Length: 295
Image 1 (cartoon, rainbow, N blue to C red):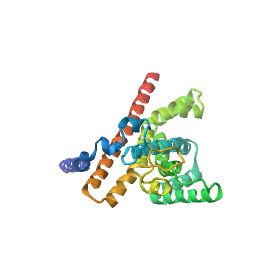
Image 2 (image 1 turned 90 degrees about the vertical axis):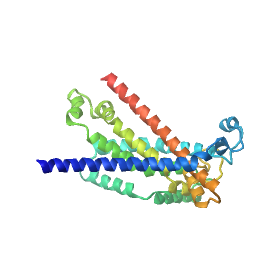
Image 3 (image 1 turned 60 degrees about the vertical axis):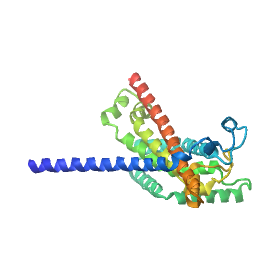
């Protein structure tokens, strides 16, 4: 009995130590970014020599500030999620509720392989698609924001599929069988019972996909991002993005000021991710509140 208690105490102690190490690592990284990059963040760093009013309302282009990269990053993430969420959630529902036997096993293996593909390979595939379309469909097709968003949506699909599938399969049997026992169809059961119960886990998958879209550099380097594109004109044009700016500055900086700009861009990217995560968390809480009122 004493030995068992000692083992449990050691396991709890190790768990606390691992948690403290993780939290300390996160705060160390954040603190390092703040120390190195916070001093570089100001209005000129974001808007350049353009007034904030003219820049925000597109009165003048910003070529020496981060505003185009900020706008390009937000548009890229939202556009990628716009393509990925419906397909990923729908496929996850199919895997959990309709697919069976060998077909489900084959799809599971395929999605696991898809999740393990390096992002640079996905970027190369997107670039190959652009080359093919440019040669055989229209010579006006070039790497652009749309191609980058489609490539990123392909990259994050496995996360959305697996998260949705696991969330639906984890619902208890008694909840799963209540609506069909009252005469509901399978589709009605999914729509009104299963999805509301698994919505929190689905949102977690969306948040994970959102973070992956915001930070990936390899895909966008091959499919449309450029150094000085200005504000995104359309989804068929080149664009700027914060991950590429950070990579460019950290790889080719000429003085400490430019390197500090890379750290400042990293801080801004973290702020954008936190804002998007907060929006997703707010939607999740609102949906949970509405579900409780319905019940």
